[in-house]
Length: 282
Image: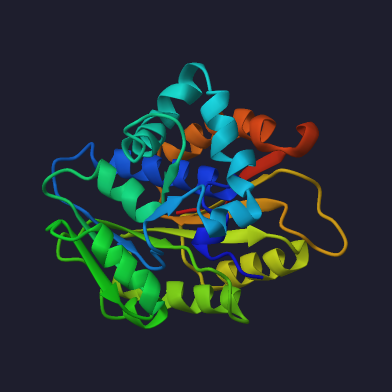
């Protein structure tokens, strides 16, 4: 499987993933102390939804387009507002032409004292990412293998931080690499918040991943998933998941508000589902 950002920008998984990202960052901002976001697989940061790659799949039409055309209401709308403001910020003329990847979503939300470290390994992507943030002193872009970097970039000097691990799943054993990387990072920065994205395609593979995470003994581990259709044979992408380590205490309640309307909005013919559960408590 290959989930490189450019082909899937703005799809249902991006919507859910980036909504969760914004809720974590908004919680961090409740305290005046600075924090750092380490984005391990940053991509190019900004995507043209009419460009060749995004147009090839058209997945954004069933993701951000649906949310843009049929906005949430009530408390869910309030929680989604920072995310939608980040999308609007890259579309100053209105409408939907561009989609902000996680670096742009993060940067939109940062205060003056906060920092973003964005890592990317693909040479062309990292060049584009550097161009997109040229002159921005709050963002540092580095061409680096994220799996190696987690041993050297943590803990952040701010002592407060979020690590977003969002690999493209181009390589074999990406699930295993995520588990090993998390163990290494958590030893260096046990108080940090970690958000690990994964595709829900083969339920058995996902459950093996979850079992390996439980076996690490890491505490305060929350799992959340949203599916847009039932699992199928042969397997195809039917859901999006995140593992959250040390999540904000309010996040579980916010997910309870956001996920039901999102599942109804993003699903194929009302066949969506969602779940949030603790894999490990305190």
